[in-house]
Length: 437
Ligand SMILES: Cc1ncc(COP(=O)(O)O)c(C=O)c1O
Image (cartoon, rainbow, N blue to C red; front, side, top):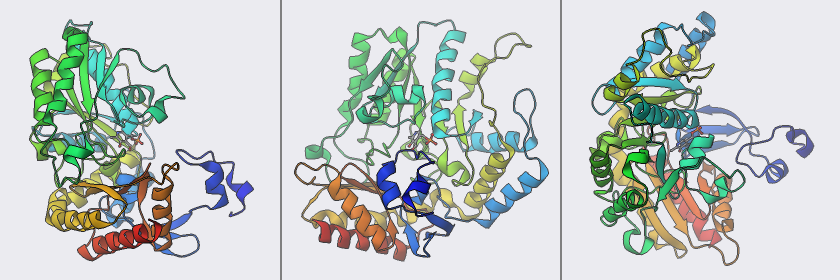
């Protein structure tokens, strides 16, 4: 298995394939806060797998539910038929929406949840007699998955450049961050709400009656943990309301307890029209995505002829029985252990531990909110990204799994993490940064 050639049949996603084959990181099992590598080393998971295993690995309640589902109803289509667990899941999910109600469209991933949200937004305007509203507004440095629509509203040049041209009629606001003014922020940066006026600037160029929706991550996650400036999301909401534009929060990372709440929308007190979620929804144990629309959107879609298919959209595995079972069991665990809010209790010590790294000489910024933190390193001259990769490797060597993008280190542990484990994550980082820089 460790023979480089034998690894090359698998074209790995978002991976330097040749580099991986030369030094593979292979895992054989996971339990609680730890992975075990194929050579038997325990690795403390400081990134919840990929921002998804919020309740910790190997939760018996979840794996048992998947097993039972597989043994009872392995598959049933969701096209013109269904099964009770899908309806139960959507009912419970809609109760968790900011207003305690909504309508849920199931898919298999965050990318599909985003593409679904954008389709729902355009169709909503068409149904109410405004078919001219086709434009989407996204943001620089946003990540909304790898579907063509998510990629189009996303704002990462490296991801887009090999695949352009993307969807037409997409505009981007600026990334609401300036290291000089909001560096080393704890929680919401005090400065930067005015970035929301970028939306007004877009509307000065493109007639507001041509804009369908604005999509943002309430906290930009995978590009480096950027919490919204205080007042920013509120301002976006106001501008959208003024012009009849839908506001979509992509909560694929920020939902399911990551910010000490069901959704970031609840924590920030700003109600979007559509929420996307995935990842933590099944604790990463089965692929699932969900798009939650407010009732007025659903009602508009449902105003057609009774026998007609209202929304010609869906996936073979929408509402898959195994994924629904995993998500329902995840919600049971969240309810029983109150994982929705557990993060709030450890957020302060997590924040302090992260900001303790600020004194390391190559640290350029530290940011955090909920159980999300990022540390920017001064890039090594002429070698962007190398320093962060070295820190990543040193942490892994010391038994801690972190994530990097460019020269940014990111931490997002399962929210069941104990304070001693958070201490270990950040002391390992401290040592690793110290030896590298
Ligand atoms: C905010 C956001 N949206 C969408 C996605 C895409 O999710 P998936 O990889 O499940 O398609 C991600 C993945 O990290 C994400 O962070």
